[in-house]
Image (cartoon, rainbow, N blue to C red; front, side, top):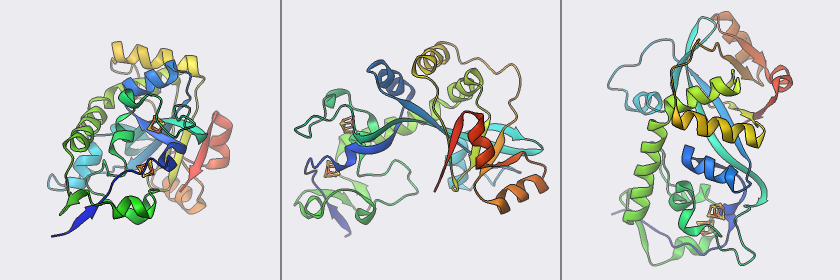
Length: 252
Ligand code: SF4
Ligand code: SF4
């Protein structure tokens, strides 16, 4: 039996220098509390529908919307992310969360993984060694032991799937049309807070179909990627050009 033991030591490391993925409702509340939310935009080239048995593709498909980049079909994924340097604005001097009962789902889930295709690996987590030496079993044979963590993961996945059309509508309202090539980096859009708040509220009330298909431009910091995109008829541009369009590129 393969078990992972873990107990949070409240060290606060996972509450510092973050881009914290949020649901629509969480992003709205985050801005209302005075926080900053960015949009991380990426696109997966999707020239043909993968086989129905491809579970990973199905997972990605359910969290992205179909779009075009020139002649190349893509699927665009948008992550709403609370962004802060240094401690989270909700982290107290005593390292306790000031919005504990209302904290985002992702804060309830860490250090577990939301993506079912990622295994939780202590070496990739910020938690100190002693957290992993606790007597409490956290996962046994890959199954999380705590029902509230499992529930939070389910809620996060459901919220992600349910918000795809709202994300498409949000991009249209904000005029976003640049995305990274998935797995290379992200295009980070940082709309002014009040404008983003208004757009978030707007699309939650009315996520109508877009009037016209946005044609997306794919951004990379790799010349070879941009050249390949252009060869296959996509719109591709180097990150230095995208930076001039009111967003910036974050390479992985
Ligand atoms: S909301 Fe709370 S738990 Fe989440 S990062 Fe901020 S302080 Fe930490
Ligand atoms: S880094 Fe790990 S141990 Fe530290 S507060 Fe976050 S979850 Fe708890």
